[in-house]
Image (tube, rainbow, N blue to C red):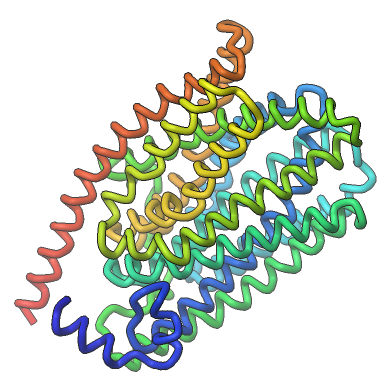
Amino acid sequence: MSSDATAAKAKRGVLEWVLAPFAELRRGEGATALLLGAQVFVLLFAYYLLKVTREALITPLEGGPRMKAAAAAGMALLLVPLLRGYDALSARVGRTRLLGVTTSVFVLCLGVLGALADAWHGSATLAVAFFVFVGIFNVFVIAQFWSLANDLYAPSEGRRLFGLIAVGSASGAIVGAQVAKKLFVAYAHGRLIFGAAALLVVALGLARVAFAREAQRVRDASNTRPAETAPLAPGSAWAQLVGSRYFLLIAALLVVYNCVNSVGEFVLSSGVREAAWASGQVPEAFVASFMGDFFSGVNAVTLVLQLFVVSRVLTHAGVRAALFVMPVVALGGYAAIGGILALPVIRLAKTAENALDYSLQSTTRQALWLVAARAEKYKAKALVDTFFVRIGDVAAFGVITLGLDVLHLSTRGFAFANVALVLVWLAVAWGIAREHARREAALAAAGANTHAAA
């Protein structure tokens, strides 16, 4: 450890010492990290209220699992105009107003859906519309949160702190899934949707406090890296993407691994649907209970990984090594499903995959953008984290359609198809690791030159 790092650790405050088992913090960093963790906790709480409701509405329907794949593909088309509007807005307002406007739009949409939910209960039209909205909500809101976090922190800070901040994501998902499971039957769907809207307002308040506090911390430390509040320079996210091999590879990664995940979700949904109709229970109640428990199990493992593993892996092994953990686990999981086709095996494999996705993989994916320029962290990142995530769903829909209608694949066949896709995933991760090493070296050299000039 360098002498500067040792000195910084010695100057930590009480809060930083309390959080020391989970991450390496410097004086003044703990409060902002906790505020951001609280913000993403609230966001994930809201998302899981919506997600459990979404699953209970669509999965029991005839053709529900396939309907989900088709609806996910439709999200990509809707994201194109949304992202253009986001580009235009980001060139006109600072990050606080940008967050306020986007949050207000989602709150308004949730209000409309909440008012319609109970009247349209049992309708395939509502189920599909709600599925599409929740999918866009998830990728957009979470992508924007991490854009803001990337804007607040330098690469060295992000590697240390992102694992701790993302603990809020894991714990919010656990709480949200359990609350939704308990309240789904007792309360009308609309009330859960209204509750999610209220949580978004709380998240916006937490973000404003975090921004103000971090700006003050930077000023107090006389840091030359300002807390940016000005609008972003005009420019196209597509131009940033096409001009960078690094961003293109990240986009390819998201397409491949979301395709793998969506095909895996199809396998899981098919198994759950069969079990629901064979259980003798009301199918909606069975699915809500199973998925609530499944989500809670996934998120409990996620929380443990996030608390004790992620920050240490990113700090000591690095971002590039962390890229390979999830695909290796997914490779083993789908091979196991193909070999032993049973709901408990599917559940175990998907629990391992999703827990790594929501913890190490998610945090690593966000840390890849620490070496990007500020405008790229908002524009190119928003494009990649929303549109290309859903392009992965489009690819999955193509795989599922081809598998069902042309190749007539069984559930076991889809598992082995995912084994092949994971091999592609590993190759893309290798390319990203090489490009990340180049960018990190260039950033370090630029920093060294700036320091020498000063």
